[in-house]
Image (cartoon, rainbow, N blue to C red; front, side, top):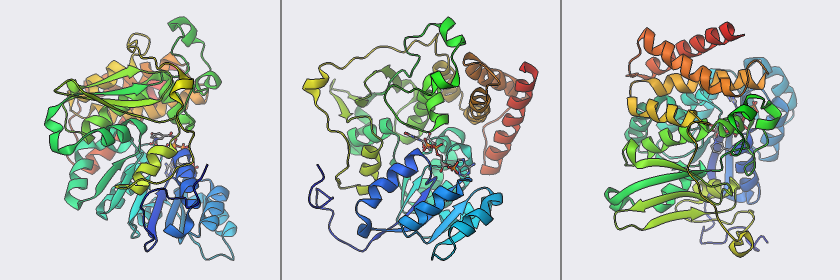
Length: 402
Ligand code: NDP
């Protein structure tokens, strides 16, 4: 039950914190607004963005009294303007407007745009040098080194939102990070954890969208079914935490209660647990370095009884080895992998390819890119170019398959 004051700890009444949410209409964006809306006097909503969902964005902007609402798709501008007429919310649309939204001074920005499309606006938010709650893992997969350099240049406080990375962030004491031996990210195993390879050949988008524990956007739910998501998370962890690629691994944990395990040199393993609800890691990033109340189901371990763990099956889920190889290669392959995966997931959701073809298309695109010759991107323009070229390669391989 919600305590009399929504904030259980000592988050004292202060000037409202200026908050922006990039990707406000998505799963993470809505969960963030759910938390903010429970204690509105503590927050001053600056900018909310979406791609083309004008109605929902306008509703959110009005409800949370935002200064600015922005659509990434310029064609949605008239709809957004009409939905906001008679209010004080400013409307804008287009890729440049997204970047301008991210530049508006905010104390805390949630980066929750889906995909590599989030990179440019998220980097603009980083340049502000304040707090960035990072849900968009693609920033780190596509441009990890450059992104982390921008973070350190600006002095931004990066707060990981992915549940596993939030868990690791909570379990790692930066003062003794050289004593970490291993970080294990947990994975639910997705809807096909117990399916055979033959069964997976017949999997439909509806089957793949039935995630057993988490409620997420469609792209991420499909990534969880292929285990590509866990691979992307390994790359994310590699950039976020002071460990080598070989110190990161994955353990399947179907209940999604333990989110990450950090093992230290003395054999101690620190883990973080919570019920599978993204409002817990979002609340952690929102209140950091304090804690706030979150409306999530409390864990009853006696009722749960037992927690299960198993090794991932890398043969049935080749995306895991693929991402690990790409991470080790450190030559731009992760940028190609992310771009190809975005194309492949979209093609699967549109019924153009079968489930196993998602990872196969990513592999083929990486092979084709290697044959053409790729090198590690040195600048952001290099990243955007490699992303674009890789999408083109994936699309042409997709047409060949079709
Ligand atoms: P959703 O698909 O639910 O939402 C994506 C959001 O981004 C929407 O607001 C969407 O707008 C907007 N968007 C999509 N494409 C673009 C674009 N090209 N330009 C501008 N805005 C765009 O995604 P999730 O909330 O599930 O995930 C968001 C990010 O958070 C991803 O990077 C994901 O990996 C990460 N994440 C998500 C978790 C989850 O539980 N959902 C957990 C951990 C990480 P519109 O509604 O108009 O399409």
